[in-house]
Length: 197
Image (cartoon, rainbow, N blue to C red; front, top):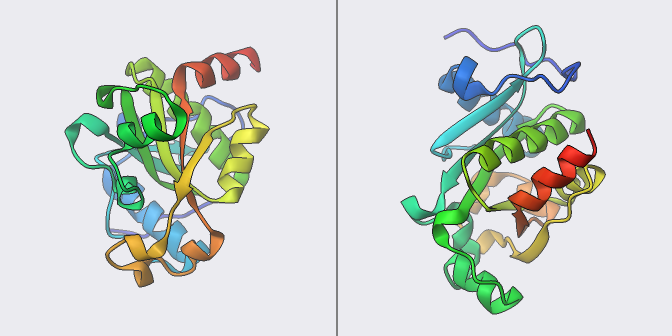
């Protein structure tokens, strides 16, 4: 396979391409690996079941992420919690949520903050269309800032501590960013993003 040309140009419009329709999964995986290695000196080996990407008008990947459906098994971020996610949310926030309503977003990689924001918008639209109500993810402060710039306010649930994962050294400097587990209301996010367009 030839190496991908990872451009840092931002997509010119919100008409970015969702990769499950247009891009090869191998290319998306290589983009995620490359971006995590570049930003954190991390060696990513685990990928979400469903991968999506954002391309420039020239067809170059500039952001990618994946998602897992909670009813299909244990979520990666549940390593950081003492209870299954829906039980943790009930205990901490007093909300009763169904596992079948939850999607976990992971593998989020972008060449720039604008790409991350566009990916948040597209992922929100995609998961809303899929009928999901809640999105959970592990986030750094810079990612939370991307949400805030879009008018979204995910709720922080717990710190994402390196000692909770099997091979923390493989994550390079990622845990130096003090990531945490967060959750957001997809319906509310979709409505707010629609109001800003």
